[in-house]
Length: 281
Image (cartoon, rainbow, N blue to C red; front, side, top):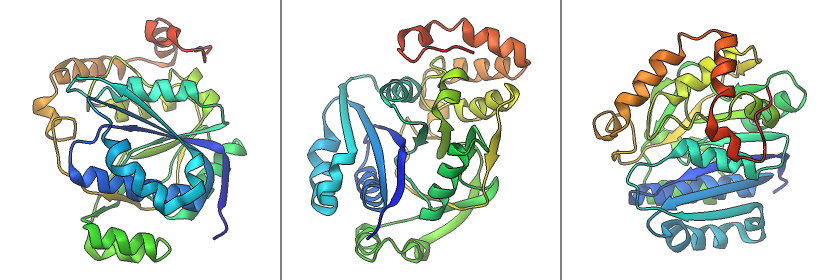
């Protein structure tokens, strides 16, 4: 199988495994990415124990062989029940060194041509940030089981297998975004004042468009491998996330700011000072 060249990109994947279907999902997406693309992946698991290393990594290694070298796995022990996704993403942005950075959810897939198209659009400076799916009914919710995933992996990643148990649902601002790394950094990275599942996806889109960056989309489906919904997953997090009110208040305030006010706000954020890839806008 000839790989698609995404060698100037790094997938950054934050991970907290809270159910068996999350294990299956991360195995599926990493087997797909590592076999289909010549690329770089940083996965950071933050949890009380190394669930990925113990239950997912051995199966991934067996499937991808030497391609496992494309994966950098980082573990951070934490007993915090709230998954601090924004901080984890920033740490991986800081650790990456490629022109393109892909903010990637651990439960999503797209057809290979979508990855390549977005990668090229970032590299040739057509866009600074791009969503590899359309706005609206462009999410295919996949209700997978072990047999379906096994068939998908062993039948050369045939997406028609996944579509046998799927529903069409809205897609808006989450899932995955392709960034020019310099833009990601200069635009303020991820806002660490949001904690847990929160409106950070909407804020990210608002911010980069308001700051005047070229933000685009392609008309493509995102395949979302469904999973159990715990306190770190929407919509359960609306009630279970202890920071939700602060998150919503922050979003309410930020969306009132114009371009210059947003620039001043992000210049004042102390969390950005700890990273070697300094905010310079």
